[in-house]
Image (tube, rainbow, N blue to C red):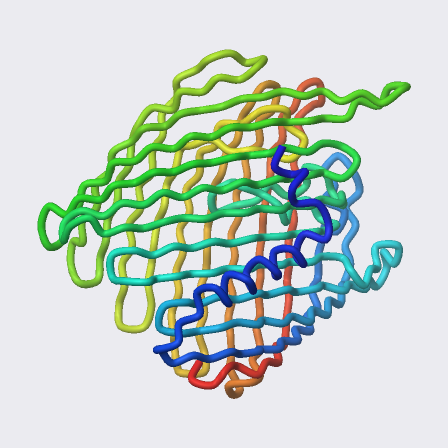
Length: 401
């Protein structure tokens, strides 16, 4: 499997690959700029359910100090852009001191974009996440599933690449490939390989038809605590042809609709046909924007031995009050269901940012989430969680940013 090719140190190999690509493609005739952007985020937050306990158990609240240094290194030119970024979260708990860690979470990302001419563009990316909270890793559109495993170590590594091509003035096409490996440490892991092909045909100035196809291939491995330890391996795949329509209703409003069948074949669940649907509407105004997205698709959940059905709806709002102050909110409902498993999650969050200058800004956030879990042979469980946080960010942005 592909994961054998990307063993540790993964981010070092990714950085080397992107650096080699930049040397090969760096243009000589365009303005070029290398940059380094340091960040330091100091955050304190109150968590009223720090252990993700269901309502049948005592819920433990705590106050946490999180310190997050981050470094971005990149390159910009007329045809080539790349960036490497890594952030480390150190956390200290007031009461639950056994959760203290100088490496509680780590987030790495590398991206590269190459546009040799107006018809062709290519892109690639690598992603790495290592965390002590499994909710940080999810593929569910717009929402996570908090509480599934509480404070469990998890890891994700992903590689993706794509090509976009302008065939004619009215016809564009793209192909994107992505491989993701998720692991719940000492419990399970999964490999998810995706290929997405898309054609967009312009009908008029403000309307387009979309023709798409998505192929997904999965492999799931779960450790069974027997003597000796055994691994349960299952496989699945799916094919999703779809058509879509986009309409720029006005200068400030856009609408998109996609629909098609999902043909899936899982090793134990057998063959099924389910719908794929996506509807998205957005509207901009002088100082902000509003958007709503609804989707019916499939995804993976940590420790599940097969893909699960996913339905979600998400609304978001952002508003710029002044040059120094902006705020926004999000609301989400998501449902996932598979063999012997179902979870309904609703959440609401608000945030506000105040910039003292280009180098320092203050952020406040509140988020509430509630999840109902129904998993055989366990009884129903309800998990509520409130988070309130205040953070101050120090940075030195690159010139011109």
